Amino acid sequence: MKPPEQLKLFNFARKELIFSGEYQIMDFPELEKIASNKTDKVKVALAFSFENNRTPCLSGIISLSIAISCQRCLEDIVQDLKIDFNLGFIKNENQGVGLDSRFELYVTEDEELSTVELISDEVLLAIPMVPLHDYDCATYKDTEQVVEQEKQNPFAILKNIQIADEGEE
Image (tube, rainbow, N blue to C red):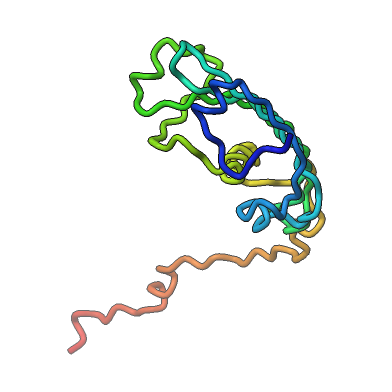
């Protein structure tokens, strides 16, 4: 069953619901802005649970290949991502005490979250901040030769100034 538009944290955790489905990159506005392969698939699997009888948690896997611009040459670079995440939804830091360390704490007052926004956030966190090819990009290399100029001493002009003899007046 494909995830609904809104994730009802407590309700889904109580029922231990599991969702899986496929999207396209263009279904995620934040990803569509940076990706050139907008029609490629994003596979999502989500499993809800209750931990410590009070904390709704979400374990998920997101798989996709996203084509983004190399920050050196601006050509596409394809990042194959498989994102495993475990989130524990809490309203304040104290609720996270005693929660298994595999869960990343997600502080929120909301009992519902947008599926698209949650998935987008996880993908954006997994993408390198400065995506670069693994090799030296061809267009990155400077093709102009560096010509070094002889530097002049800024005080060299002073040697041409003649000091007037004090005795000649």
